[in-house]
Amino acid sequence: MKRRVVVTGIGLVTPLGTGTDKTWDNLIHGRGGIGPITRFDASGHASQIAAEVKDFSAADWFEKKQVKNLDLFVQYAIAAAELAWKDSGLSVTDENRERIGVITGCGMGGLPTIEEYHQVLMEKGPRKITPFFIPRVIPNMPSGHISMRLGSKGPNLTQTTACAAGTHAVGEAFRHIAYGDCDVAVTGGTESVICPLAVGGFSAMKALSTRNDDPATASRPFDVDRDGFVISEGSGMLILEELETARKRGARIYAEIIGYGQTSDAYHIAAPPEDGEGGARCMAMALRDARVAAESVDYINAHGTSTPLNDRCETLAIKTVFQEHASKLAISSTKSMTGHMLGAAGGIESAFTALTLHTGIIPPTINLHNPAPECDLDYVPLTAREANPEVAISNSFGFGGTNGVVVMKKFSE
Image 1 (tube, rainbow, N blue to C red):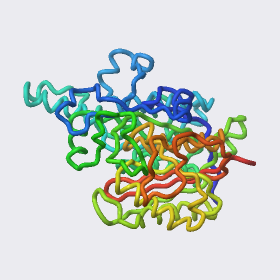
Image 2 (image 1 turned 180 degrees about the vertical axis):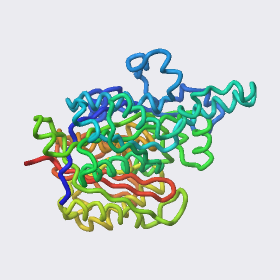
Image 3 (image 1 turned 180 degrees about the horizontal axis):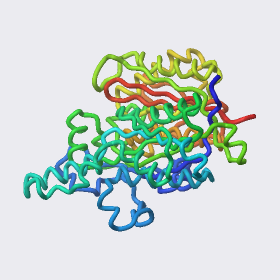
Image 4 (image 1 turned 90 degrees about the horizontal axis):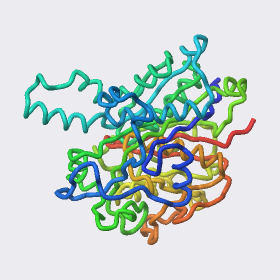
């Protein structure tokens, strides 16, 4: 029998603010974090906008000599993990450290560092490459550093499944606890690739919004005028805990995770199938794992990227799974405010889903003034809604046709 798994800590570093309270307040009040790119001169790029983390100070988390050896995606992950750990009230002891795991997700790793040191290589030669180059760029460094900072010695894994990585990390952490491999896990996603190569690459695929003259309205999931996603960065980490462990110490519980699904489209490197069947199978798998009927779901935190293909296909997938109940669901895309954090998205959106269940407040989909004809469900447009949902799911779909879904419910004894 699977053990019950609950969320007892949340830590967020996002374009809406560093810290969970700051991010959540901005989210439910419909305040977006998108603006012109400031990290580099983007004037030659088709897309010149991004959702950058604006208030993060590395000095709050690291000694000066450490900072230069950690790519931003690692810094964000460590900070979010420490915020989540503090929020949980847990401590690491000799008795429990081997039962604490760290499972994170990341899509692209230290791409800005690769850019930087490729230039160093070309201009100054190989002897000028820092010995920290490789540890700065490989995607599993967040989980390694978090484990070392905490002193936890349980399972240590990284999922690199594109835009589904954060959700896959949360789902795998849920399973590791449910089946007894550990009692506690730090899990979520992280990403920071607002750099010329990533922006240029996604632009070459025609994936990014080019609404450069009005960044605040550029991310508009399910809207008839949507024209692509807005690249973003940040980290969202959760503390998952076996229920009895949490009960014994009187932990505050945000939500319970009850199901997880993962499927492949086996269709295309970047596009979903027209009928969204891979995403539909993933949602159905997660609901079977959770042992809940589709009619029991009240809220979906959608993948909702603001691309013409994703939003239409995700809507079709939801209709396939939920049938008549689809029109009764509250659905929102928080990417309308955060932008698309790629490998970090699923971690952050899992945290948002837990907070939705905990507070009873459903975040809005901002900028949704004219829903597309093919997007005809209830996407909680423009303003948040007090609805007290009992069961919710969070969707993530990634390049390569990989899909991930987690199911949560409001905690009750």
